[in-house]
Amino acid sequence: MATLTPTLPIIEDEIRIKKQPPYAVIVINDDIHTFEYVINCFQKVFGYNLQKSGQLAMRIHTEGRAIVWTGSLEVAELKKNQIEGMGPDHKALKKCDFPLGVELEPLC
Image 1 (cartoon, rainbow, N blue to C red):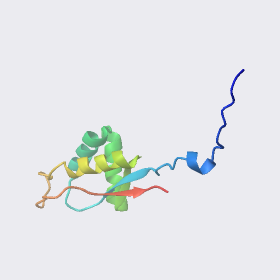
Image 2: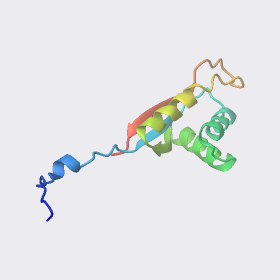
Image 3: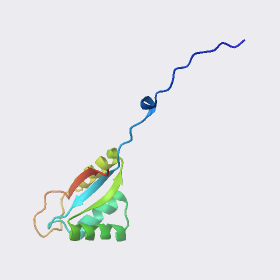
Image 4: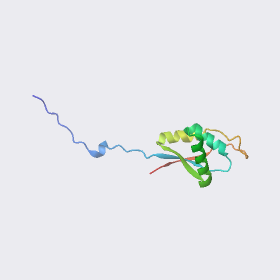
């Protein structure tokens, strides 16, 4: 004869897993960094091709900022750090000793 084991009711709130919102990596326009630098940065950090990198660089230039990548917070932070770690733009007309301006924002 099988013995019955009492079960506890499942409370819905206990099994809900709160999902993190996706995050956007946003690059801010400046008048210092060259298009070549920005395009090269996007190719290295995101693996984008020349066309997509150029389109994003133009959007940043004309709109003042653009979302260049979206995903989890952890990866967005990594991408931000990689952009900031690209070093100075040695081809800039003015002295440039700072990285591209980059921000993270939740998408919800």
